[in-house]
Length: 371
Image (tube, rainbow, N blue to C red; front, side, top):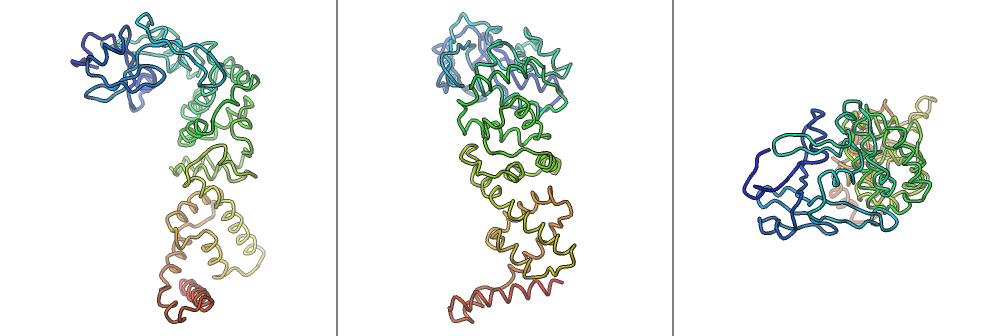
């Protein structure tokens, strides 16, 4: 790892995800450091910049990586904010590791490369098991969400039965009800972007937490299949979120607080799927499906003004309607958008009804000429 002037003489360790991923042969992400036996004053004197709120965290003066003083935590109230932290010089590395969520995240690496693994995290990595560190797991409901997210990321890992039992206790005791929407969305967003996002939801279902953290979300096999298909195709967060919510009967956004791009796609996807299904049903039943129907689909999604969003919608819809030909719909959209709306407005003398009728006729003709 190397030691620079700012850290020379400090008892420092890389901890958590960077160590875990390195042991698994995965690309290294951001490194988190723990400093043992120091004080905030000593860290500032070395040039570190304090950024912590509830507990002492500092940015390295050159690398800007985060260095946190070793700490313990004690439950003092309900929910994930209900903790009192202690970061004195008497806190050991083992103390700090014992407050973490899962054994695979409670491994440290010293400056000379030596692993510090008092809780058996290395063995659990080899055994492909996600296991809680200790009884304090049930004190923080965020840990349940993190477990579900890690299960989606490391889909070949099992979850220790006793850890799932603790998750059920978290739900039974009402701790999950203290989660705020913003925190739920943070973990959902990370889990949705894994290679197997459906497993995150399945873990939440298995411990009875899904209906508490995302009330109104309808989870069904067809939703799981579409979501995992989106992951296989590398779709973005908004598309995966839309597929997650596509069968839900209520607006989930008040609970999940998803960004506007996610909300837009979640709002539009069910309607698009319904219209595409209707067209397919009409065609298979011998009914006439033509340019007017295609134009109705495009206009219902506001595709003419938001072509990029329509393309994203098509990508999500194709995970459900696998016969959907996105390139055909994009060609139709291009043909409709090629119509010169300004020229039609001028020819109509500014009359609103004549403009609407003229645009409709010109766009329909453009679709007919497409063949």
